[in-house]
Image (cartoon, rainbow, N blue to C red; front, side):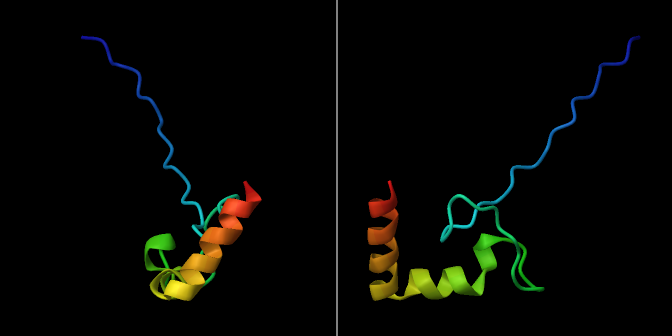
Length: 61
């Protein structure tokens, strides 16, 4: 019986939704990624902020 070589897989790095070119830097101690980031929540839950963020993101392309 031969052993099959194991392939080391890396986890994908989470990207910051507000700064798409940057990885999530975990700005707060109790945050595990963008999914529970307070800043992302605040921007995405405010319709005006979300619209402004969308316009800036579209203009940057």
